[in-house]
Amino acid sequence: MKLYVVRHGETLENANDCLVGRLNSPLTEEGINQAKKVSEYFKDKNIDLIVSSPLDRCRQTSEIISNGKIPIIYSDSLLGRDHGEFTGKPKETIDFDEYWNYNKNIQYEKAESVKDLFDRVAKLVEDIKEKYYDKRVIIVTHSGIMRVLYYYFNGIPSDGVLSEITIRNCEIFEYDI
Image (cartoon, rainbow, N blue to C red; front, side):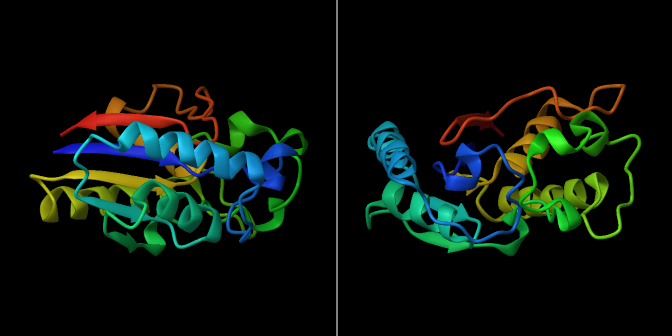
């Protein structure tokens, strides 16, 4: 199985470096252009399926990549991390390393814990591997989900800090399963 994971195109909140989570924001013009470039990348990859977060920015990105030629299914398991009380706030207002520390797994008042997020995403990957084991699949999702997938496939560091990687809009990660 070949699995590609794509972060959605830019939104206004991304451009302002805010925690977006489950806010349902559309792509900016730049985000649309980014998605068009990604669509070109996948043009000759013989993709069988796109699995996408249902939020508008991912829907738009998926539809541009698909160009009406690749089936798309939507999964709530790919929703961004529920940032709860931090939603919409600039990233600099929180301790990002602590917020993304798997070992500490801080339980916030409203925000989703790292381990809960990790478990949700891991279950989805196992389901995709079982159902589409012989396919070429694109996941279109959010930076936090891509972060979890990166550490799911590469292992969690001993210090538990999952914030070491930065994921740009429309960045593509590839995994051979």
